[in-house]
Amino acid sequence: MTTLGLDFGTTNTVLARVGGGDSSPTLVSLDAGSAVYRTALCFWHEAGARDGLAVAAGPAAIREYLEFPAGSRFLQSFKSVAASTSFDTAPVFEKRYSFEQLGRLFLAELGDAAGGAFDQVDRLVIGRPVTYAGTRPDTTLARRRYDAMFAGIAREIHYVYEPLAAAFADTDTLGRPATLLVADFGGGTSDFSVVRVAAPGAVRRCIPLAHAGIGIAGDRFDARIVDRLVLPQLGKGGRYRSFDKVLDIPAGWFADLADWSRLALMRNRRTLAELEKLRRSALDPEAIARMIALIEHEQGYALYDAVSQLKRALSGAEQAQFRFEGGGIAIDAEVHRADFERWIADDVTRIAATLDAALAGAGMTEAAIDRVFLTGGTSLVPAVRALFEARFGPERIASGAELTSIAHGLALVAREEDPTVWVPAEE
Image (cartoon, rainbow, N blue to C red; front, side, top):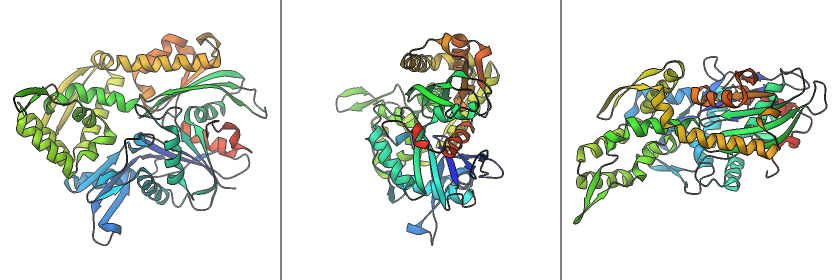
């Protein structure tokens, strides 16, 4: 039996395969030997392509965008809208794509990059967040969209909480019984599972006790950087004239600009016309002109890359330089880690409250946890790690394979005789 574990992430997607029996999962090579595949799409006009639009995904999408940004539409973090009732379709040139359509296009490209890994799959286990991203996420809507996206890929399809999958991955190397807390920090969500781990050889090693999640993670941290360093140059805090009144520019424009899933979608005729109208009435029209130029010149990925470089640098140093140039904007600013931690302090506090909810759901305190496993790219942010070291002590914290542990664990679940045991009750 051919089984797959798929970590469809907000920022990255990873695929693991199990051949059958008790064989160990292997990560599937997806691009130039890497198992990590960017969850992104790039569209461009091409004669002969279906509907006149060609599409690439993953690293190929980035390469296509970098070659011709002005003629591309680059979409990233689109998983973030899976549970959003306000999202209907994404405008891409003259076409509009639903979430399901974007997802199927992405999976088709992913399957090709994986050498046909989706051909004749018996069982597919897909990770899902405990709580989806968004202000008021609709879990039923997200499930319906996921079902339409993944339909037909395998004879059996199951969904498992991502932190529970990471618990399976950690347990695979844990040679003793323990009470385990898994904290999974991705691009869109931070999720927690408390799991009782039985001794090796037990029929059922992982017994989930409680779960909790919140739609705050790496993308929200990115938005804080954009808010502080970029948006003031694009008119945030500015005003405009409306008849005989002077009003504040609506905050919604800036919320969209700081959201990777929404920034690319602003490049459409209606939005740009509204921004041009705002520019003509703004007290600082040049700032709005810069906003328009950033959108029209498709600078979303370049801005994302600059923000990501800053975060990585601040994970290893007390200060780093933020550099971004594009769309009429040029920023070269020194940023101290202490400043960044102040910007995300409220987010970290809400993450800590969600951790408390997971412990309370299991009826436990920190003292009852034997081991804490941190995974996901955002777990590398020092302020996040410091939260756990303060609560549990560094000696109880383990980490590693931050980008691949969930896919590995999903494949282990797929290997089980009955994976439905680990499917959330609401599914």
